[in-house]
Length: 431
Image 1 (tube, rainbow, N blue to C red):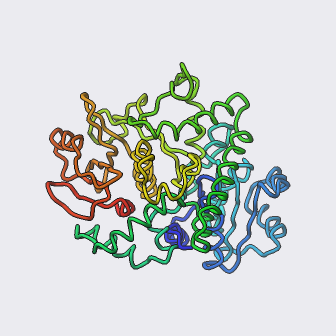
Image 2: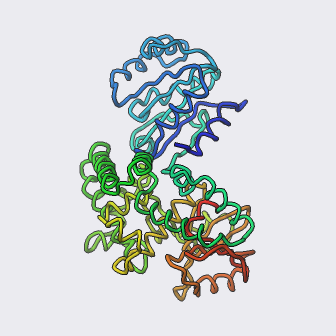
Image 3: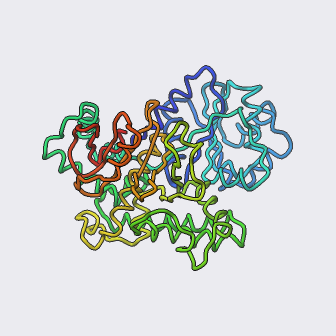
């Protein structure tokens, strides 16, 4: 399946200042597949090492981590000759071997002609929790996320539709009604399937929602397993409680995260480590309130006011045990959850595109779902789950801050009037 990361990897390979690359991301987002596929098509051979399935590898790095020492031994273990510039060396689950991570520094300094990509699914957790000697400044770092809506469309054979969506987004011209309806249907499908490559691949082959739900449940179980395996004993229960509660909080009218909803009398001091673990593992992300609309927004975030969104829509629906048809037809019983689910979807698309997202709230309670810095401008983004056109909060924001323009995502077709760029939900990947 096509992944946008392949373009980034090609640029990395050609780069004159290339360093060893660390590709991080949550479990099951397709790191290993993407890198091995890239290796097969762009190198003469691939030397692959997995520190999880082959724990004995660690011993190789215990004595000496200089490239001159390591390369002959790694060639022997891989059963293939590692050749400068022509072999891609892959260290998978690198967070399990501290010395392998440190060795990247020496490859950067004394053997840059070797092409190395290290993959880590819980790298943030490992680096933060252990005393890792992290090769700061000696590696390139990239995060891989689940597939976005555009990658999903391409996986479903809808390349032409994806191109048409981009064209209409750029020109603010409405999509033909039939294509708009088809794209909305695919968007609702994406809410059920999500962007985990295994789920997308299975659905493209089988169209079987029950099979996909089984796969999603398996991925959720592996996340719970990680919470037990890579977390301190007294934090495991809190981390699971927090993760279970996120989907509950997204059903509230006010989706701002509240500790007291995890358990009665819950406080930040009790659960902040659990939230940090979930964020570092790539399973969720925090979106902070911007207290002032000034650049850089990061300087004005309110550390006590935030929302939490999960990294994949399909897993969100599986966690809530929502029936596929209920989402495909957006039944009324989902009314309480629709807003939070669609906000979550938009946050996923914006995050994949590299935005740091914030939200805004006025003293009188007007709220804009997202505020981002786009092309050097601060742009507000309002999200509506249907084609409801009223956006009172957005008007309050625009009257207060006079942005160059605003974006409104809803079920409505493309358009631009009154300084508001209207974008259908299926086109969120274009922002």
